[in-house]
Image 1 (cartoon, rainbow, N blue to C red):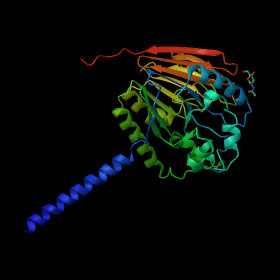
Image 2 (image 1 turned 135 degrees about the vertical axis):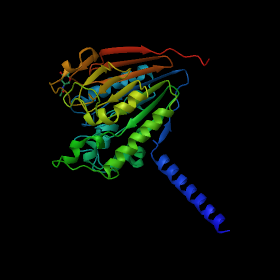
Image 3 (image 1 turned 45 degrees about the vertical axis):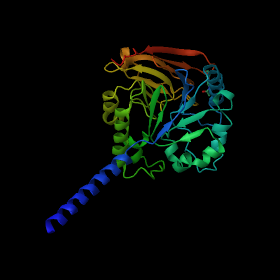
Length: 332
Ligand SMILES: *[C@@H]1O[C@H](CO)[C@@H](O)[C@H](O)[C@H]1NC(C)=O
């Protein structure tokens, strides 16, 4: 009798341990959002970064050209690579910068779509919870901002990663205040984020796998490469055969091909202030496909077998165009 009781107790304990593992595991999963597409086997979207400056620094010109391209391509949504509101994010949900830098700027009919946004380092200098708040989506229904999440479409899985907490220097930058609520303890936050990204990518059966972060992995711009992402995130991206890594942070437009993997590194950080005037072009040799030290944005067109990216300047000129195709594998 005593033996039986003991056994029941261990079984219960085992179950409890199992339940905990499941709980921990499901906690490190990216929140997933389904985006229904046209269903004609194609999907187009725009990518913009580093923009919110109340229309100044050519933000309005970029917005105008985005509107034209959005209409022409009949886009599904816009992706914002972060640094949504300068200089210090939003002060709160009632900060007029939200409308002055977003709603009143991107007014074109073609841009009245969902805007999937992540946070940049400047956003962390304000009230982070405000940018993540559903109240903003009530003010402007296009707004959709989270820390790390997955947008699942018929053609692609798009993984959004909150990269600011990865970067050491913000944690020793005492000149600015960062809102680390929800990030600390930092090590656990990073581990959970990487684990969620890895399991999401591993389980993805999408034709195209895209990862979006604020900080660059490869870049010839002013900020350049992000060492923390090269060490911690890049091995996961390579192991899971992602197609594109898209980012902002450097205020330029660039396309760098990886020489040791199929990954294309795409920087779209030209939403407003640009022209930093210093690049490390020569670091990339054959991998550097395009670099523009000025304002603009990027479009992405996907079908089941082809992907095309284009970069535009403030006049709407196409500065760079690149296409790739994938062979469809039959299920035999
Ligand atoms: C706006 O764009 C034009 C054309 O690229 C550029 O010459 C000008 O310097 C830009 N203005 C600012 C404030 O960046």
